[in-house]
Image (cartoon, rainbow, N blue to C red; front, side, top):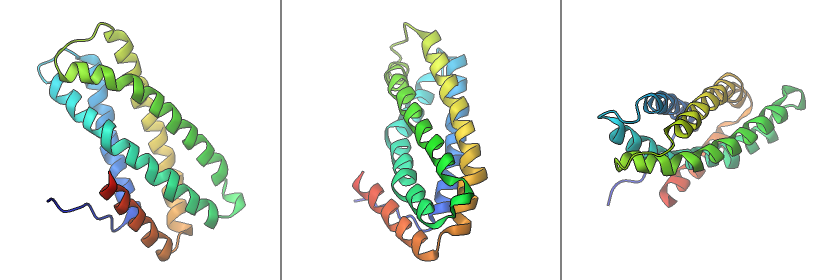
Length: 169
């Protein structure tokens, strides 16, 4: 049996995930431009693995742990409620695009081919664009606010919750 993932530093873990998200954006854009390339099936499988496992876990990390803790700890004048409302709405948009991209990625991964390459390309570019904007908000506003207002006890609880989520997935 393989060792279960252990999250020790949750904010750094989330930042690392954001770096992976940027790589997924680049891969999606490349795939949108070259869906019939020799490397397209492998790229599609890599993106699919991210979509099916990592993205839902990351969204849960933020919506079940990070956002509620910051809401509890930050001052009303920090503007966090407005930021988090926008980010949660973007998570919904992400999942809508996700549900449209997954079937297309499966076809590309299996080298079946797509009937609607234009629709896939549009959705892939839209997802990448939204993700970059989302990441800018999270890295520029949310994580700095978390570092400012969360206690070590909060971070330890987050780490435990994030680890348990991955062990249950």
